[in-house]
Image (tube, rainbow over all chains, first blue to last red; front, side, top):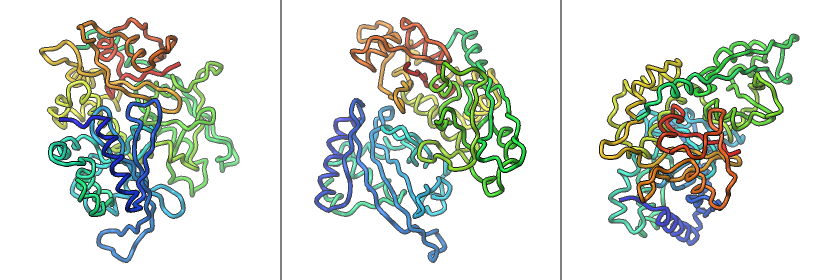
Amino acid sequence: MHLSVEDFVKHVKDVVTISDRLMDGWALKEKEGIENGTYITKRCTKNLTKPGNTNATTLVTFEYHIAYHLSYAVPIICLKIWKQDGSLISLEEYWEFNNDLKESNIYDTLTQLDHPVLCQPFLTLHPCKTQEIIQPFLEHSKNPIISWLSVVGPFVHLNLLDEYIHNC
Amino acid sequence: MANDREILREIWEGKLPVSFRLDSDEVADFREPDPFYLMVPRLSYFPLVTDKVKKHFLKYVTNDKQDQEMWLEYNGQPLKWHYPIGVLYDLMFSTEDLLPWSLTVHFDKFPESEVYKFSNKEMIEAYFMACLKEADVLKHRGQIVSSMQKKDHNQLWMGLQNDKFDQFWSVNRKLMDCPAEFDHFKYIPFRCYVDDGYRQKLIKPVAEDGRKKTLRDLLNEMFPGRNSVRVKTHGMFPPLETPLQWLSEHLSYPDNFLHLCVI
């Protein structure tokens, strides 16, 4: 069972509807003339702490994109992280803030890939395991995108509010 | 299965002469450094072949720039070096220009929103393997790559990195194989470069009625209603009657994708 582009669009629109109610910041974007041109984005500012050193925090801005990957027929989460001086955080720098991924091989899980719509480099959770994760949700969840995000989001500092979970 | 071995070899051996010059604003020495010349394989990636270039120019820039990532520019455009070199050339090289392809080297102001930061070879390898996996998902639902051992993956990567045709193809032929019950892939892995990026689409190599689809069919599906689309790859325009399956087996880049530049 695979997620179709149409279902993806329907579910991300629902995310935006909930987000609007909560003023949570998710916005719908569309690029015309592309089959998978619909995606959603959100920006938020957070303090990142290095594991084992709770005094050293860095204020950063995250930009998340949820788009549809045609080849894998799955949703994909891409992100950019800026420091306060406007420079981007590299894959290795982000790795130092990220305890959850420590066990795995850095380049196999989080890699630089082209955004499926914008064709620009983004940090991306590699989509090759997504089908496995999302499979049960496609059968049982009202909104598989929310269910999937609630599982993989925390790996990249994205935690969904409970109100989303109530809707899936 | 990719049978036309002479063609595979010919494609593999495609090379481009490139001259590298350090941006004059970044020269911190009283002498202008000499340009650096290289013959580079079309199928490779710039970060795999420019170690010597970096070494040559580093001594001419200020100390504070020496730790910064090198990047390349042509005609005011930064080179996206996660595209294979031949693709960048087919996309960017101006017909009014002469060879060698003259590129400007920079150490300052890395264009990080457009260009990948490959700070080590593992990152390029990860990117390359990600492309290869995606291609296999399209061709064989990902079954070949995932059934391969780590040493096969290494062999593909080392074959490309060290420009060893036999080493690369002894593994790559498995990726170019068709499932026993069919004589074609599920979908053709390709990227069609237009505007500032590229498009992909799920396109089967065979039509509903069993007819073999051609490059013309692919372009019709990508650009409905536009008749005069031509695409360039490996520096040539493949005839529109070329069957897609043959094209995919023989003219794909090492990442197993066809890279078609719309002209």
